[in-house]
Each structure stands twice: as C-alpha cells, then as structure tokens.
Length: 137
Image (cartoon, rainbow, N blue to C red; front, side, top):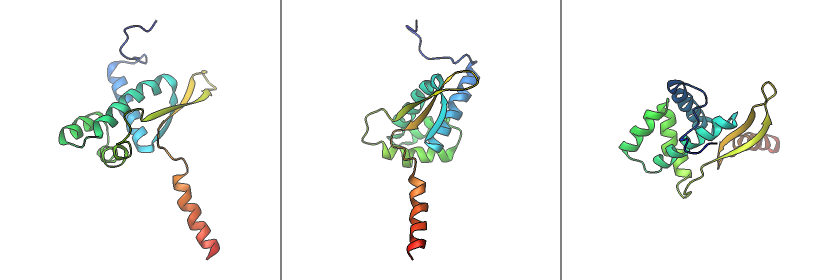
C-alpha cells in the first residue's frame, strides 16, 4: 500500500532523482510536451505545477526559487513571460497526461505529459498560410 508515502523515489538515489526532475521539467517547459513513463510523469507533474504556480506572481524571490530548480535561464524567462501568463486565470491543473500504451521492450506504460493549452499544429498553420499565399498569389 502507498499510505503515508510522500513521493515516488523511482528507484534512484536522491541526486539522480533531483537531476531527473530538473531535466524533465526543463524539457516540459521547453517543448510543452514530453513522452515518458507513467510513474515519471506523475512525479514530474507535481514539480511542474508547483513551479507554474510560483511563476504566476513575478517577483525577484519567485524567480530565484524557480531558477534554482531549472537548468536554463532562458526557460525561466519563458516560464514567467509566456507560460505563467497563459495560465493566469487557471486555478490549477496546468498539465494533462495522455496514455499511449505499453512500451515494446519492457511493457512500461508510456504517456504524454503536456501543458493544458498545448496546440500541436500551431507552427504548421504559419507554414500552411505561407504556402497558401504563394499558391494564390
């Protein structure tokens, strides 16, 4: 049973687990969607949602706390200026987990962890509109 367990250690040493959290949360904010296992996604979701909540109030104190937990200063800036602004009105639940099925090699359950307002074809619309303009003009 899982009673009174604070977090899933993911069978890693604490330094390895902290590095895993930092890199995966950084990747989530960079690409806004990552593919991983269900156990990792549930843990990364907790870290990511806490950072987004922290970033909704832009202050020096919050920026220092968030930058201590992320690798890249560019991602910290993106979190405060882009992601947190989009999530301003949302009281929580900034991420979603979409099940993909089992991995072929070891049957681990794979999922997509993504931000709620992720638009998969946002970049494609710009390309399509340029192609349509060239074809029409």
